[in-house]
Length: 362
Image 1 (cartoon, rainbow, N blue to C red):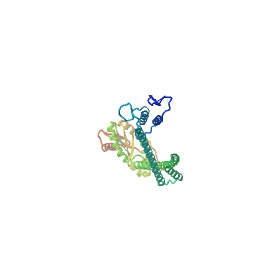
Image 2 (image 1 turned 60 degrees about the vertical axis):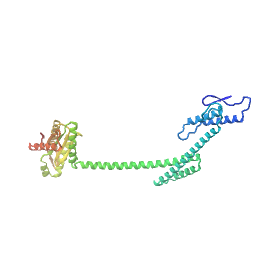
Image 3 (image 1 turned 90 degrees about the horizontal axis):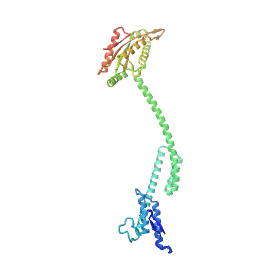
Image 4 (image 1 turned 90 degrees about the vertical axis):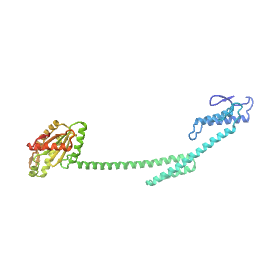
């Protein structure tokens, strides 16, 4: 009768004839080999050990006892080898001590980690004012389970403590999300107020057009962009004709009505988002356009027609006004001050030429 090793080789199960009872030594050899092989089926690796290497070493010891093959790690001839009982016992004992030490260290580390976790959670709950009785009860029960050493009790209390902690964390998350929403709403409100303040600082309060500060910034940027993109940039300087007479005759409130009416006509004449219409100061306006002289002159003519058609209601009367405009297209390398000076000169030429007209700068 024979048994087979893990590599498939036939190994005698007993060294006595079939009609004889096996000796106690033979029974001990076979039983010990069976236990070694059982351990090889369920190896216990420690640290970075390889389970296959451990399994093979158990198998080698089992085969050594059965057929007297060389013991693991031994050297010498393969014939007439005595069974190395001491070596086998030393191997099994060494494995047992190593596994026991690892288990104690792991359980001890787990206990220490759990105690630290409990202490941290307790401090966190107190520091945040979370004196939840259920959570405190579960942490206390978990502490007792750790001290008892019962794995089943530890598993049970760990599940219950996890549930309690999760509940508290969910409540804290809900509170935090509510506070975050409130903070976002407050920040959005502050941001909106800041944006409105910024716009107010850049807007003429009477006409609601951009103011002189915006114009000064945009003129430099527009010239830089026009030079980089190789595209035209034109400037119109516009002035309400005889505006001082309007104020002197009809009063400043009616003069403000005339300013608002002309501002509205400017917005309608230059509706593109790329057209910047500003109140430059007093009764004077300015327009920056990313178009050449031909297109801008056509828009200026439309503006003059629109202003002529205005009928501004006064107290029992109707006011009509006209405007004059000077147009200048930026030259390569020209500064904002130079462009503004040429547009201003063209505006004064329009006024000297009879007003209610536009003049293109040279």
